[in-house]
Image (cartoon, rainbow, N blue to C red; front, side, top):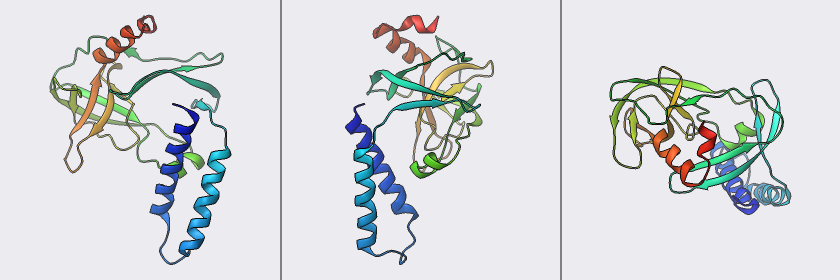
Length: 197
């Protein structure tokens, strides 16, 4: 993602979030326009970098190595001397309909909340409703909301079996994840299968 892409995404998201939070009648249209113009100017003059913040407050620079636009996946590298623990990937995605799963992520935070508040990871539980042959390989009932996309879907052995990608709007308990088998195949195709050993 280029700096301009980053700026465009942040600009659209912040403007949307500000619009949702404005109380009607407090500011005039001209005052709102002035605020937005100033905000856009600040965004365009800012320099951006990706960071990872650990639960104990450490901050590490991060870079995006590869992007898979079709499946909305990215491979990221954390720079610095960090001794991270990790989750084991169930490479074959050996999970069946009816098995319990846990979804983790950072749901329902808009851009303003992300700037000013600490982010807390959430866990939700559910079961696999179906294994599908389409792009979204795992249908499950572990609740995921806006912000959970990209979070891990775990089995009860603490193995990653999928990457949460979304839900069907206006449907109850209809959530989806890409299988780890698909992620492993992508990493193999781009020459990064060694990361899984």
